[in-house]
Image 1 (cartoon, rainbow, N blue to C red):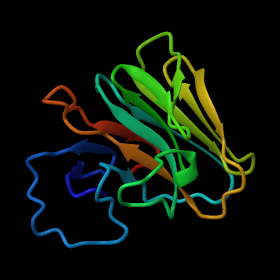
Image 2 (image 1 turned 60 degrees about the horizontal axis):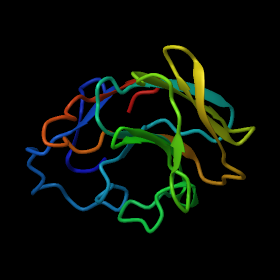
Image 3 (image 1 turned 120 degrees about the horizontal axis):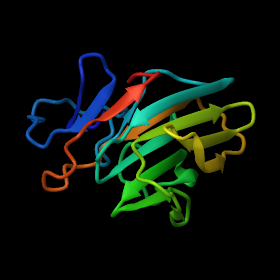
Image 4 (image 1 turned 30 degrees about the vertical axis):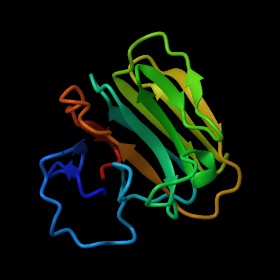
Amino acid sequence: AHPNLSLSQSCTSVWFDEDKDTQDIEANPRRFHYYYCVLSHQRFTSGRHYWEVEVGHKTAWRLGVAQEDVPRGEMAATGTSSGLWTLALKGGTVLACTDPKPTKVKVSVHLVRIGVFLDCDKEEVSFYNAVTMAPIYTFTMGTVLAPLFPFYNPCDTDDGKNTVPLKMFNPSL
């Protein structure tokens, strides 16, 4: 996890903590050090997997699936070519983080809880409005050789407007 992220004791919530003392945190090549991200401890290489993330009233977030070898520092591209299949809320707009630029996604209602369905065998990641089960967006991943992990980015606090944590429901962090 990025040094400025805090996790709940149950490892089911994550939030950005700008007041966190990060001076004594040792460098680790597996730690995200540019983007405010964390991967779940659960890894997937086959089968079908579903989990939900409560985004509530957050003003910004990003979530989905990442390859184990996703870059941990600054990336030239932050979408599918980097091993990330994610949906994001930025500036009031929902985006599918595709390369070379994100794709705007139309949603008819404010998203409160998002379902993520990973089908390793079909090589797809699908996102749903978990309240209505309406589909939001589906990525076709193609052949992925590295293990896959649930990916979470609660984003920064946005001057106090984005302090609510992301809450995970199966799997946990």
